[in-house]
Length: 198
Image 1 (tube, one colour):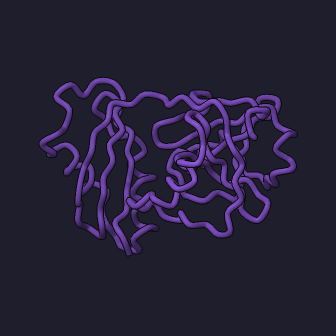
Image 2 (cartoon, helix red, strand yellow):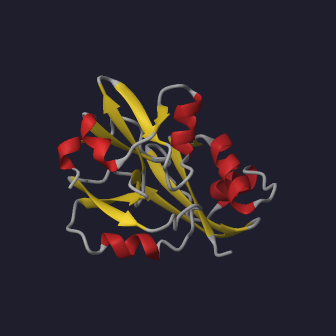
Image 3 (spheres, one colour):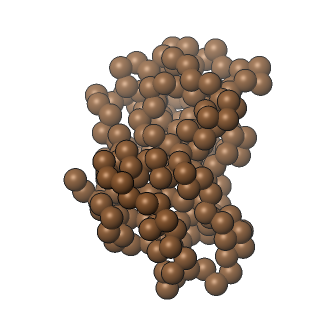
C-alpha cells in the first residue's frame, strides 16, 4: 500500500472533526491508529504557523503509524467556474492516496477553473478534490455513489443536514445547484448552478 494523505482543517489553531479523521484513518489502514498521533505531530512540527489564526489546510502524508510529511497552507476557497462530466471505468480513489497522479491526469486536460466531475456506471460521484451536494428547493442531497469517504460528508450525514440519494447523471438537471464540500469547504462556500456542468 502506498502512502496515504489526511487533510485537516485547522481553524484558529483548532483541528476540526478529529473523530471523523480517526474513522477514516482506521478504515484506510485497517489499523487502530490513534488520531492524537497526527494532532501531536502537527502541533510539534517545525513549520507550524507562528500565526495560527485563520483557516489552514494541514496535509499529513503517512503510512501505517509513521508520519512522512506535514504541510501547512493558508486556505483560500478555489475559483471553480464549471464542472466537466467525465466517465471513469472504476473507482481509482477509494482511499485518500498521497499519489494523486490519476486525478491530475484528468485535470490537466481541462481549462483553468474547470473541475472534473467523475461519472461511474452512469452515476455522479465526486470531483478531483471534493464530495458533492446537490440542492433542490433548499434541501441538500449527496450521491450514494461517492468515490472517497469524505470527513465533511460523514459529519453532515450524521447531523442530518444532508441526505443520501441515487444520482444518475441524467437526473442532475432536476436540481438547482451543486455544492462542493471537503474538510475545508462547508455547504454554500463553493456553489455552482447546475447549468455549469458540461
